[in-house]
Length: 136
Image (cartoon, rainbow, N blue to C red; front, side, top):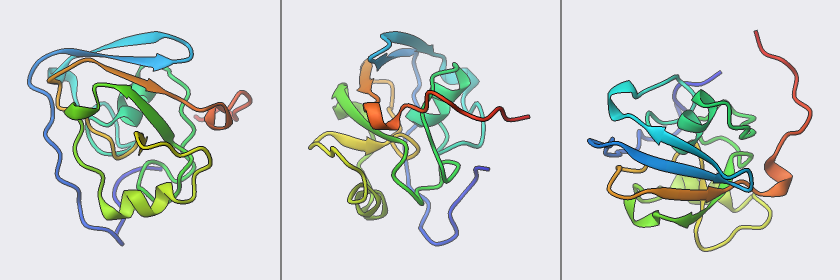
């Protein structure tokens, strides 16, 4: 799955121009993001936390394929939030369906850091899929 949601406007986001690091909690897995390699896939917005995490084997559940049609990729931005694109009204509406929302909650499929600072995001317990079917 992946691609775009035909029911919402495309969200503008600036892709990074310099390398930066995303650290995923609670695993503390740090990913060095090389802007020249973006986008990695069609899962979420190009350069999104979801796309980067999946490309580096970080487990982030995403039932809708990253098109802002659910809230399963909910993450909490612990630091570096100033480098993200603003949340759209569509993203905020989807976050209303997520449990444990905080003031720094974002959907990983829509949150695109611009690379101006390193980022730390937490994947909530309910969002980590410990048993996942293999995809071919």
